[in-house]
Length: 368
Image (cartoon, rainbow, N blue to C red; front, side):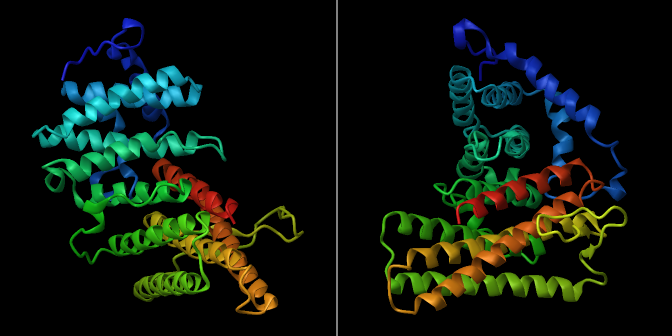
C-alpha cells in the first residue's frame, strides 16, 4: 500500500503521523511502569499498554492504518465532519487492502490497534451521543471475519478482546446486531470468560431482535411470552455460570463495605456503599456478568412495556412484573458503578474497561 496517500486538500495522510505520536506519548506518560512478565495481568485490556510498540512498527501498512485510525478519533472529538469522512475513507481502503495480505504480523498489529482505539474512544464520547468509535469495531470485525488468516493471526486472547468490544457495541448501539459469525461459532472452550461471552452473544441477539420487533409493532402476546421465556433461560445460564465461579473460588469475589470516614449521602439519604475487589483479574468477569444481567432485565422490561395493551393478565400483575424487572436492572447498573469506583487502583487498562462497561450499562438503562 502506498504510504503517502493524497487526500484532503492534497495533503498526505502521513502528515497526521504526529497525532499518532501524541497518543503514544500520552499513554507512555500515564500508563503504570511495565511489570515483570511473571506478574502481568492477562485482562481483556492489558494490550492497551502495547499501543506505543505499534507506533514503532516497520510495516508501512500498520503506520498508514494507524494514522487513519487516530485521525478518525481526532476528527470525531473535534466534530469535524469533513476530516472524519476523509479519514474513514482511507481507513476503509486500508481494510480492503489489508484483508488481502498474507503477513500475519501486520494484520495482527492492526486488529489490536483498532481494538485499542475503539475502547479508548467509547470513554471519550459524551454520554448520550452516538459512538463514532464504531468504525474501529466494524473494521476489526471485518478483518477478523474475512481475512484468510484470521484464525491464525488472532490468539485466543485477541478473540476475547474483539468479542468484548463487540458486546459493548451492541449495548450502546441498539441498531447494531451481533455480526461476528467467525467468533460466534468458535471452537468450544473451557475458559470461563469464553463461556460467559458465548452467553452474552446469545443475549445480544435476543436483545436486538426484541427491540426491532417492538419498533415494528410486531409483538403479539405469544411472541412476548416466548421472548420473556428465552430471557429467563439466559438469566439462568448467567446465574449458573456465576454460581460455578463462586463455588470454585477460595475467596469472596467482591465485598461491599461501608465508607470508612465521612459517609457520603446518597439521594435516598443512606450512606454510600463501596466495593472492594481483592483480585484485579476478576474485575472484567464481574463487569460483564453484571452487564449481561442488566441486559436480561432491560430486555424483559421492554417486552413487558410492549404488552401493556394486551389484556391477557391483570394490569396490577403486569405492573408488578415490570417494576421487578426495572428494579433488578437498576440494581446491576448500581453494581457496575460501584465496581468502577472500586477500580481506581487496579491499573489503567481495568479503569478504561470499567468506564466503558459503566457507560454501556447506563445506555441500556436509559432505554427503559
